Length: 223
Ligand code: SF4
Image (tube, rainbow, N blue to C red; front, side, top):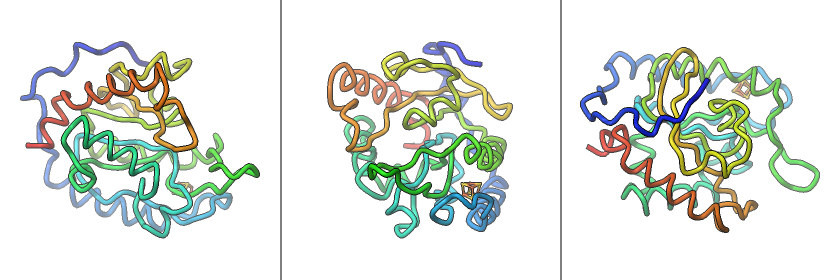
C-alpha cells in the first residue's frame, strides 16, 4: 500500500540514531547472507553491502557481472553514474554514500546474462527466495528513507506503479515488512538505458535527486 507523501517526515528530530545493538545484529546478518546458496540458478555468490547501520537504504535489482569480484554493490559503470548523481545533488561522493547508506537489493547474487548480452532480470521465484533477507534488514534498520533503483526494486514498494514517468521525481509513503517509510524512486543508472539521459527522464531525475538531497534522513546522515 502506498500514497503520495510529499508532506511527510519534515521534522529532523524524528531522525533518531539506529540503536547500537543493531550494528552487531546487522554484522551477523550480513555474514549469514554471504553464505546463502538458496538459488541454484544464480551465477555468483551473494554480494551484500557492508553492514552500515543506517536509516537510509538503497535497494538495487541485483549485482552485475563485475560486482562479485569487486565484492561490493554498484562497483562498475552503473555505480559510477549513481554516485555521480549523489555527488552533484547531495554533495556526497562515493565514499561518503557507501559509509552512510545501507545497500540492499531484490536479489544479492548475479543472475547471469540474457542471450543478447544484457543482465538477466531475477525471476519472481528468485526474488521471493531472497525477500527474507530484505525483510530482516527492514526489521533491524527501520529505514526512514528507501531509494529503490530501477523498475524491479521500485515495484517492491510501489505496487502497480505504471511507468517510470509516473513515479520518478516524486516522494511516496510505503510499507514493507511492517515498517513505514518514505520512498524516492530512481531510474536504473545503467548505460544501456537512455531513460535518465533524455527528456522527460533527465528533468524527473533531477527532481528526484532534489527530494533526496533535502530529505531529513539524508541531512541526518551527513551530520
Ligand atoms: S539470490 Fe538471495 S536467496 Fe538466492 S542465493 Fe543469492 S542471496 Fe541467497
